[in-house]
Image 1: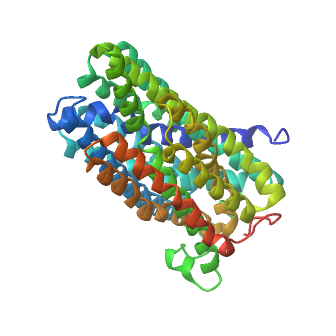
Image 2: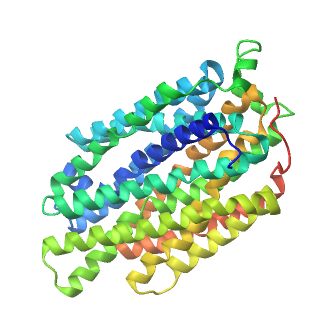
Length: 436
């Protein structure tokens, strides 16, 4: 990576900022849901009714996020092939920053859902533009490393969201959980600074400039033509397996940590402020464990992809993802041990996403690259959207919401194991150059 020139590093950094803040904005709701949802529904925070409603609405709003993410990714992937990667990156960052910050002013759950939908369009569109731009600008022999480095922005974004929520809701405003979540959402405006950076320092990749306006605009239907269909299926099946697993489990990290901490606080006989402090601290432990595992797992896709190949890499990550989820949620474990077991979940379930930033752009030629990568990565979210909804709904129906959530998440562990059946359809791209 030391051979990259200054501009190539600038492109990588700009895309890294865009993707990191993308994850930051998309996950803020998950942290504030235990306080946000009951407040907007007029329920008492911490009550059984509030816990059930939080599980159900976390599933609903996460599924809505994924549907908007899918629509934005497909739409802006096509736009990026038409008007350019840089312009699309700029617009999508502004869109998700404004959408997330608007959640702070939501008077009810329906307005919150609308604001989340607006943000999700930009969140989905940013990935297609940023990943494609990096793949086209860096040298061929550094594409895998650059793609993995780009995805380390996701753990960084989650770390930032964890830190800000802990400081706002767990320290400065821990005695005001009914209002602290609004201040957390206001931090969603931070990505606007990344948009300014993009505007000032980036230009369109030469690969795109060479084909822009010289060939007919890309069409999604082309992805299903005979020569492209195997590529589309390969990218889509790997993405949908990873996405369904990730969102079905990660969306409920704060909810599970909250339930575990609330039970522990009741055993200790803690007062309300101390209970809230323990809840926010345990949410941070679980999220940081998941985040650290994700960071390491993301970087490990580099040697796995280069030495084992893409097909074997996906098989290994899916197998280990299933094992991590089944152990964490299937065994009787002390609550704090369960929190730290989010590390191997992050290592595998989160880590595999480090590969998509280079694998999906590798599959398609330049004029279809953002369209194809955006379609595969984001249409999978339409299928994945059902995961959080079902997990939230099923978990909310049990008499013990925490135990119901843990039992439901155990079954999520079989999703990546089913994904192993798709491995023979994976197109191996190791050693190939980008097609023009």
